[in-house]
Amino acid sequence: MNDSFSQSYKDAGVDITAGYKAVDLMKPYIEKTFTKGVLGGVGGFGGCFEPALGGVKRPVLVAGTDGVGTKLMIARVLDKHDTIGIDCVAMCANDIACQGAAPIFFLDYIACGKNIPERMASIIKGVSDGCVQAGCALIGGETAEHPGVMPDDDYDLAGFCVGLADHDDIITGKDAAAGDVLIGIASSGAHSNGFSLIRKVFGIGKTSGALSRYVPEFGKTLGEELLTPTIIYVKPLLDLMKTVKVHAVCNITGGGFYENVPRMLGQGGLCAVIERGAVKTPPVFGLIAREGGVPERDMWNTFNMGVGMALAVAAVDAEKAADSLKASGLAASVIGEIKPGDKGVDIL
Image 1 (cartoon, rainbow, N blue to C red):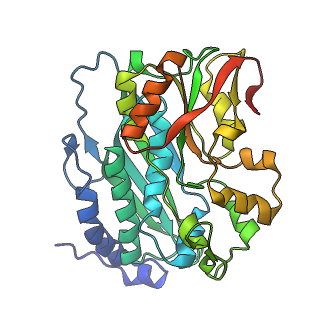
Image 2: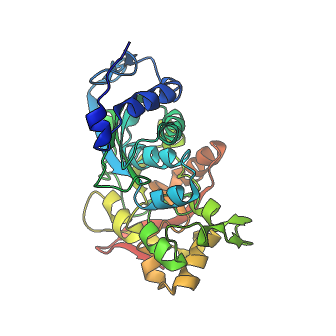
C-alpha cells in the first residue's frame, strides 16, 4: 500500500496523492492499449516492450515526437478533454507511418498547473483511443504539476512514438519520379495545426463565447468543429503499402502544403504540382479566410486545406491506391502529379 504523502509539498502547490488517484483512474484506458509486446504493467520507472521481429530482415526503429499546440486552449475553454489525446497520438504516429513504419508504442507527457485527476484521466482516455486507432501500446507517461509556472487550469500535452520498419521498406522519397500521381487523403478539418491563427481570426479567448456560435455550414458550433480530432491514417496507409508501391508520403501539418509537400521529395529536380480544383476544401477553411481576411497563399501555407496526407505512386497504381484507401473508410482522390522542376510544390 502506498502511504506516500507530504503536507509541505502540498502547501507548495503539488499534491502527490492527486497524482496517484489520476494514475488509478487512467489504468483502464492504458491497459486497453496493451498489445502482445508489452512487458509489465502501469507504474514502472520505464516502459518495456518486446517487439515481434519475425519476418523483419533488417529492423529499424523510427521515432517521432510532437504536441497538440494551442488547440489545447479550445479543449480547456470548452472543458472537454477526452479527444485532445487523439490529436497527440496522430501528430506522432502519422509522421512515422509516412516512412513506412508501424507504430509499436507511445508515451505521453502532461504538464499542468494543478493535477485534477478526473481531467487527467479524460485526457488519457483520448490518448488511449488514439493508440488503439494507431495499433500501438501506451506503455508509459508522466504528469507533472508546475504551480507558479502554469495557471491551475492550464496544461500542455506532448507525446513520443516509436515504430518498426524493415530497412528495405523505409520510404524516403528516393523513389519519387516525374510522372508519379499524387493521391490526397481527406482530413477531418483543421486537425491540430494553425490554431494560433484560428484563435486570432475568431477572437477566441478564455471564455466559450466565440466557440458557442452555431455555424450553419458546419451543422454544429464553431467549438465542436474546431475540436474535431485529427484522423489517424496509420492502419489504412500501412495496408495500402502492402499492395501498392508507395514512392513518397507527406503528412500535411503545420506549414501546410508549402512546408510539408517538398519534404516528401527525396531528390532535387522534382516539383509536386497540386490542382486547386481537385482539392475538396471543408467549409471551416473558407470561414477562416473570409472572416480573417487571410490571403489564399497563407491559407495553403498554414492549413491542410482538406488534405491530411498526400502520397505519390506510379500512374498505373493511382486507381488501385485510391480504391484501397476508400475501402478503409477514407476519402481519397487524385490531386496532382510530380513533374520536373526545383520549386518543391506548385499550387495551380
